Image (cartoon, each protein chain N blue to C red):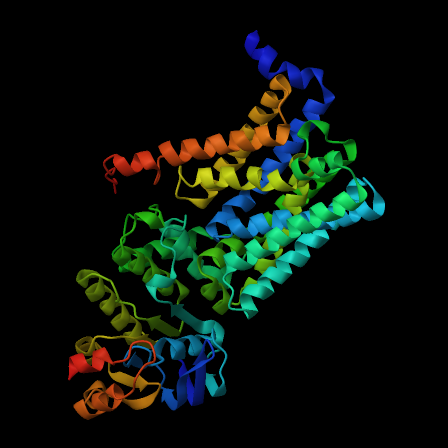
Length: 290
Length: 246
């Protein structure tokens, strides 16, 4: 009884909890696979830059149109795509290493976003944009999240094989007539889309957490990419579920609770995962049966 | 099945530094050629240009009997992330990209051929292993299996035996001889002079420019190696390989 009271009743009794749950499921399914590819491409930091880059776009939309969900999402998507382009150009045409240019971009974006929001709104609105609130997802945000996630999953499925090839052996894809640059651009657009969708629930500062942490955690449990993606989806959803319940029962901020749950998953994986974890390092190496 | 490649005054730069100057010559149909020379001589750069991965500064590379899509190119093993989460089977069937592309199914027949290729490189039974579980030698064998599956008339290999154990090297040299026997054109960047003399009918000695392009006996004659040695690579300073051979 206590079990159902704690874990199931909140979702039966409250509309907003169900909405939060389905939103998080959508974000987990579409975002977590992208997180896996971000880690495989060693682009975790780029993901960070992109997530911050969304803020100025959202802020400009807020400045012009007020708290319109659609305008803010569109602003975020545009800003994210622009920054993806700029960073690609910066690494290509300057001697700056990727991490330095991305760090530069995300610091500027964050400051710029905070400045623009402050010019027009109050600190509550700023806090909402930075940290979100999964328990207060509006009807229209909900539809946006589910819509973006569906589109994003379909597009990912369409480019999946090419994307894996592009990550593993870009030269081979190029020689074989694959369109590596196109695939890379589509991938960046997917990341921006899923960050904008996660932003609705978790704010710009936390959005990446639910995409990236479960993906990093999954690397400690398997060495095949499909299992890795499945595990990261599962982990992302489990962390969301746990985070929502913590937030509901203890009255703590939902985005922080969700990301902390994902963080716990990450730490457990680093320490006790079956592949390359701290524990695996100290245990004798398993003999591979052939 | 075979291809001839003509280099016409090929000049290349790598990261905006000049790397290969005015190289002209022909890789004839079905030839088996080793490209060798000191470090920084432009061997890999030239191979990349033939594969179409680097733009030419000057000159032309023309293919007779096939176009660029008929190339199987093996980069240096260091270029791969050997902990990438794929299985050996996954890796080998990527060789069917030309046929299957980004969407089409990998047919049972393709899988059968991939298994045969794995058998040919001595990796039978390791289909389901992940790449992390492979040694460097096994990883290189798997990449050779992919080339077998690609069934390309032109095969380019960049230092295929660097950091590879002896058994694997012997095995893979036999695979290369098979390719040669089947009439494919094979070009390989190699360091070991003895291996070139023993297994390669033709040799291009490169030191930024073409020093010699002939049978290994002629191309690797002491005076040619001496000429290559006087080239000073900006990074390495000396042509250690040539010193070794002399």
